[in-house]
Amino acid sequence: MEMPAPSRDLGQEAYGRIRTAIRDGTLPPGLRLTETDLAARFGVSRTPVRQAIARLESEGLLTHEPRRGLTVTQPDHQQVVELYVMREVLEGAAARLAAQHASPTEIGAMAELVAGEPALFGDARALAETNQRLHGLMYLAAHNRYLLRSLEQIAATMALLPSLLTLGGRAEAAHAEHRAILAALQARDGQAAEAASRAHAQAAQRHRLAWLVRTVGVPFAAPGG
Image (cartoon, rainbow, N blue to C red; front, side):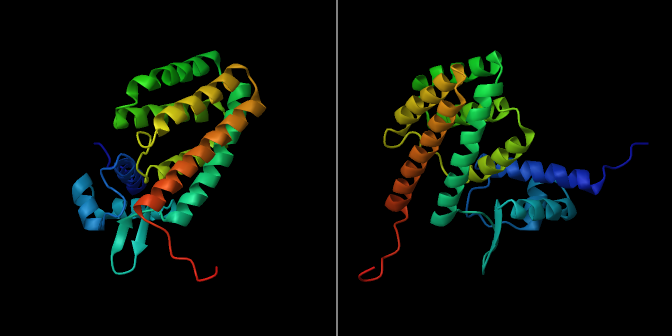
């Protein structure tokens, strides 16, 4: 007779499904959630959902807001700045290690993705997916499980932010930046790969912050401040 799965396995499954729904936008930032609603949506009991919620809160993907309760995290200005700072550091390290350790097959796969980007400039969804695959391949090509774990966490939180690749010429600029990273990887130049990756993250941050100022605004400065 088949034994029921341990609750921790159900909790892991619930965690994975909720996390995926957050990443793909099915559960968008700012959405109010309850244990009951999540249990019904994913067809599981409230106990594994409770376990999943605790884990997702610790990762910053879910937040308890005053008077609203549990919501999908909507990063504020300071969180965005902190995310991009960490992205720059970690992706720079990944690029440097990938230049040293990536296999020819891994670099070839990244080259194919970069070469295909111009054909997707008008397709926001396809371009965002290609961008995620390209960065994910570089993370894997670094061949460092501890760095990969940190990068996956950053990527999960970054997924709370809408893609801006098709706005303000960012797609073309990002493509040029990807080509610079790829060239350094192909040359096996770790220092150049890290510099190109950091420059890419800095450019993405500038574009993101400019978008935030346009859409959300900034607090008024104190007189004479």
